[in-house]
Amino acid sequence: MEVHDFFKPADWLVVFGYLGLTTLVGHRMRGKQASIHDFFLGGRSLPWLAVTGSIIATEISGVTFIGVPGTLFALHGNFTYLQWAIGSILARILVGMFFVRVYYEREIYSPYDYMGYRLGNSAKVLATIIFKVGSILAQSVRVLVAAIPLRVVTGMEMWQSIIVIGIFAITWTLMGGMRTVIWTDVMQFLLFAFGGIFAFVWIVSSLNGGLSEFYETASRFGRLEIWDLRLQKDLQFTFWVAIIAVPFQNLGIFGTDQLMAQRMFCCKSARDASKAIIVSSVGQIVTLMMLLVGAALFVHYQSQPFTDMELQTVFDADAAAVAEIRADAVYLENPETKEVSGVIQPGQRDFVFPMWVVTVLPVGLSGLILAGVFAAAISSLDSILAALSQTTLSLIYHPERGDVGLSERQLLRRSRMLVIGWGLVLTGFTFFLNAVREGIPILPLAFGMTSYTVGPMLAIFLAAMWGKGSVRGLFVGAALSFILVLFVRTDIWVLVMKAGWIRPETLAQLPTYELVGESIRSTLSYVWMWPLTAIVTLLCGLMIPRSANAVSDAKS
Picture (tube, rainbow, N blue to C red):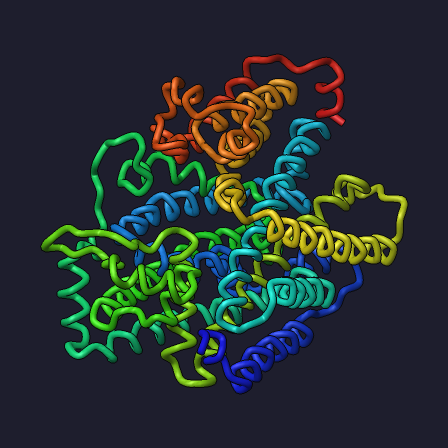
């Protein structure tokens, strides 16, 4: 018997029933769709609480819903990730106080329209290209990462999972633009919250000692530790990273990335948009809940070790390999002997929570929780479809200028065509990632894209807000930032080494790398690239003067 055999027809009925209900709600809440103002801005009539729920749902993607419990479950996992909430909340407050105000000075559709208005069309083009490059890879991977465990627990083929996610995402976006995206996101947020609370309560109540056993075991293994005040430069989840580096990342993500910023443009006023982004800080409670789920899973499998079937799922091994693993491995840390082997590794850990959902929860309830994973992947994809379509339309027709030679009906038709086009591109790119993922570290590359793009994007916005800086300098700064990140992250170099173009011993001579076996490891955490690249790009933009043409372009 395999894990997907636990996923019964009743579970499928719940999954597609939920997706059908969400589609119906999105259809009923779509409102009028007579112009791109309605399609991309929701007529600027959406309640700020709905926008808050949409921001949280987009932030808590399928990767977070299944990845956060898996990360805590894996070796040495704990609550130090929660420290990042400090920087995230601080950044949202700054966005609500300063960024939103300038975005509502005139009717624009994206932060890139504002950058173009302040610095010239070249700045808009540069920012839009940076946004598209990062979004295409990162969001396709989020769909892929959600589809992988879905394949394991439902028995669907990968291509089927990807196609289902793509069809629903395109349908929801076409149905009512941002109004449908936001209202369906609200439903995802409610399901995330319910799923996290329900899973935690169920696991703890199944323990012989209940909450006291959970707390005692999790504490004994150090799973509930939150604060890390160490100053080591290679550490990622520390207090210093949270208060210095994370605010730069979140200023870029919530303030200048169209995936998040487009929701604020749908509010009735700048005041409402400010409330929406600041109050979205409560989404950190969902992250906390999923960390608690991970800790509870750890305690659960300490008292009830993996079965052979579960080991086959987690380690992707056959029966013979499972026998060897069970004979030699401890699976989890032993606090007395410090013996560790057979540790759940990245990639393996993401199967643990979905596997528990399917094998432990009653029929129907498991379908509802897995529907949340499906919906999270769809939410990520439909959100980016709206963002990519709007920014593409804006590059071609510049609707913010008000002098488009097309009727609203024609613009709306082209917007919907762009949604379909980008939907096919992203779905196709997800198929490509799935085809090449074996043996190639494509996932770390995708999730590291924020290191390449967030800093430069934030720098362009700050230059636009101050009305200073040259696009030529910003371009140089963005290119220099890419090179800096390239020598801190290892993703691209691993691909180069696999191709045999360079040896790890050569790269290990650089001060930012060290040799580990037959590969390399960075000696500096990539999170410090968020503030560094923002500062480098901004300084280049301010120090390199504008050309005469650029000055004229900005004034026009």
